[in-house]
Length: 291
Image (cartoon, rainbow, N blue to C red):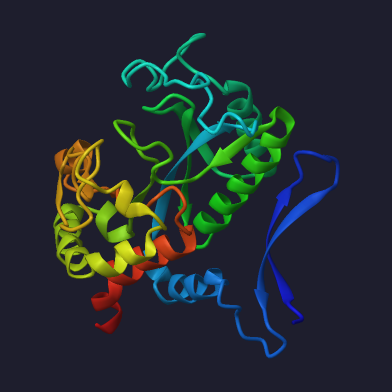
């Protein structure tokens, strides 16, 4: 039953400050084998194998804030025994009655900055009490490490405000947006001249592995990927320029410049970033490795 931990990345401690640090570790058994839950080890192997392609990532982590009271099982902003107003004014909203939970959002953002997480933005999302933070661009293993640590800091900060943070991909049934973790991805080949052609070839590879990716992109994702609420159906792979209803969105700027990155919109909010980034690299670059 003994577990051996291996230090992997050091962050500054935003709570104790000073010379204190918090360390990301992964876990192994007494024979040196990664535990079944240690998805970092497999990700590290893949990132090492394809490091010459300089894979860059940016993950957009959505989450929902819930009350901590047993009699109120709904998100913040939803009245007891009722529902919030229809979606529309909440996305990137501002002002009392439009957004809730900003104190937690700001505390988390400052904690990430202090710790050294490459957090790059925050915004209120489509459903009330739903927020998003973005981490990246990060290269290779830093993406998974930084996102997991950012999640840890969010949970720690939530303790100060008695708010329950929820990563369920469909926290509220009905006409409410789900919560995802969109993955932006590029390599030195896609960022170079002619990169759009490289991306288009990657789309064929991703289509051939669609089911494998969906299987590893988070639990309960079938409730979110329905073809509604800015998602594509999980049953069919699709991609398009500036298409937020596709599995993969190719940004307008990538199309215009002929190079850049693409956004995989399939991962759920509760996905494992080590799994997502490893799959993207392995699927998109496998043939190049054989050559």
